[in-house]
View 1 (cartoon, rainbow, N blue to C red):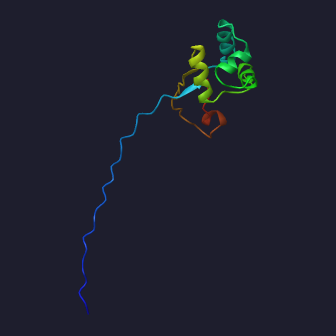
View 2: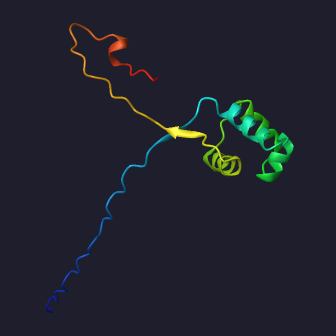
View 3: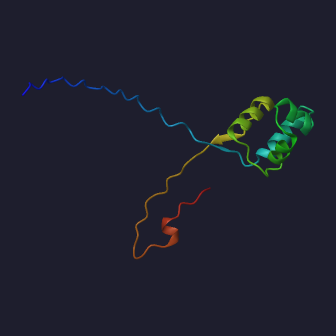
Length: 115
């Protein structure tokens, strides 16, 4: 029988990049439609003119202004940049204190309310 040749195993080194800090979550402000309409009117633009300037359909702008549709992040950025307004605010997550539970659980004990 022949000799068995041993080959050294090469070790693979994996570098894990440090996690980025969590980005601050943002949400659309409550009255985004009204804010857009007011800012657009300050610039004396019709809905159609505004839509053309930011390269969107007039129907999309109408639906956003009437709050029938929530704009995606790309559209929010276009609108914010053009009208020089802020449509997003920081999302504040509130952690409710612990409750001492006596007896059985109720729905109120396990639901976290949004403000």
